[in-house]
Image (cartoon, rainbow, N blue to C red; front, side, top):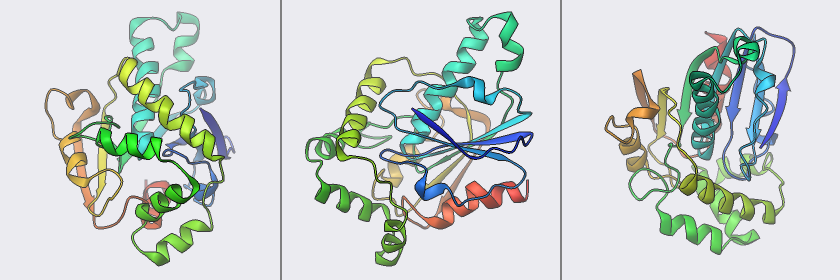
Length: 247
């Protein structure tokens, strides 16, 4: 995993953003959360995470988008589990404990490959097996609401090699199907009603409190539906910027 600071000015709080599959920092580097450092995480070919960067913050707010919801759940959930189990030693536990604030999931679920709560497996495998420059272009177009939104996105599109994206898709499936799923309670889930990447109905089911979803829902959980697409500037303007201006 790559962790990149967009703002690093020793603010007392950090906005930790987990982006989606195929992302880098490019689409998100112009957002300016107020009175906050800002880090973007991406490239889930592995889930290695340097938790030392979190030390010293009084508050860490988390936003996950798309596949980043699952990645954040795994990475931060494991840190919390290690703290709870005592794997982190007494010497370091005080500095490593996460002072978590808000945890906001946008257009993603903790079940990335799932017939009812994520991307249906047949669609996921079809994307992986048929990945080309042309199919990626179509995928990115489907993320956006209309042609104008797509043109704007093309100006900030990540430029990672296609082979990396293929490796990332394959690695996500291996990790999801073989690794322990760690509990991580999200406070807020935001669902785009016009999402053509992760079906909106699947997202709703993923955030409905039941035996499978319970580990990923905070006791006080809010679900918000917004009439937009999987990728939308207004979503990130709200949750990577305005949310923290008023906080």
